Length: 585
Image (cartoon, rainbow, N blue to C red; front, side, top):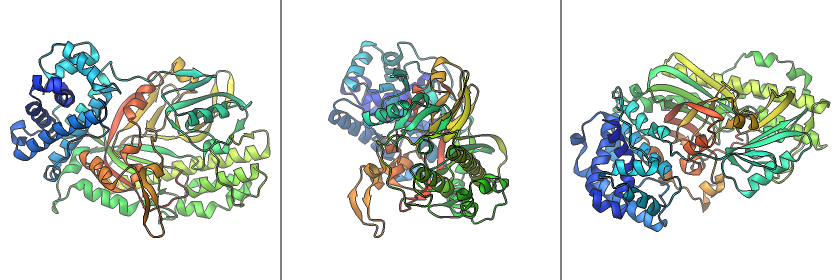
């Protein structure tokens, strides 16, 4: 398949859904041809083998449905793809791989439109006077002809990954603009409440500088995505309750497509492995790892010098290596070259939560174990000077929590590696809820990153997508933009709706739904099925629908980070939606 044919795959759905172009490009026939090309590229089957009545009917229905949805949205592209894949097409490994290709097509189209109303884009396309959909849309979007290049053919997943990453080469990809407002570096767009939070933080006299990443949203006292640089001070609720929350990614020596082979029971190896991961790894509230771990971190003197933290030692030992709930996960993912990666995301569990709660109590004049009042998102950040005993003890306890979080992710990654029987080729590991001791210019600072990734020049980090979108391995660069961010990057895609907005309200004692949310079980199922993902656990409040497009978040930070590779989820394991985990955030 040539690069031009790949462009046709990526853009023709857009062109064929618009009436002025539909007549010109024979919309229904072109759509069927394009969808067949997607499946062929992903599964190595010929287009002729895939043209059957079932697929043709699905493609025709998708075309008409898309046109109707565009009309209802006033010319804007819908959030979700209109093609409902027939169940039979998802049974074989080849068809599962093909699902990745179709989702990649849709995400590419969405990024090309970049919020523009389609009638305006249509006018640009018509003006090009091109005779085929791909050339027309590509020329209108980029102002240049498509380059010639061959799609890799070495493996089904590599072909579909190639389609998914085509957009990275396009100069018209939407770019975020760095704004400096009242001395605060702001990437992306944010609501007034989020901007007010970061402004309150920056107004503290001990703050040297502040920034917010493109995945930011409102949090407690400090917004998620917030970066606050203090001089001789630290903020416990700036770091947050999940001290040391972060991500570890491990590149194995296994090829991802090996997991799509069928076993003797007719199921894929991927399905069996995900079952093993769900059984082996401890998810959910109050769980223990099931193994006594003699780790050197339990010899740290902080357990003795900060007596309140010392009382948490036994609980911490039992919980080491547990993942918890919320947005914490264990994934199996593939990179663009077809290698299988292990990715896990969680933090310091009960140790971090109780440490943060205890120090916030002490800072407010309460006792360590007192019941803390509810968090107020509009309250100022609690800031502890480092020349006080309380500030020094918090830093020691927080750093212990960070060590504990690293050890937990190491443990879980090793559990999954053992299940796979894999070797390790590479790994990346970072916190994104932490207070880092760093030197910037001529100052020694405490840089609090609450949902932000360290990204010093040459430093590798991980930015998570969602259960249905890729995670990025990135590397920090040296630039003026990076300097004003205190060399920080996003930590994920960023939520666009709260957990309650997404999942609604439920009585967890009875399971009765009190009020429905915006995401339905059918929406979640369709999102992961279309991507060919094996999901274990996971709630409606973690559906891909509740997150920003990670492509936009990464693009907003151009000049701060470079993307090394994208990791596309194949299997996702999380706590179930009935789990209430007080240690998740």
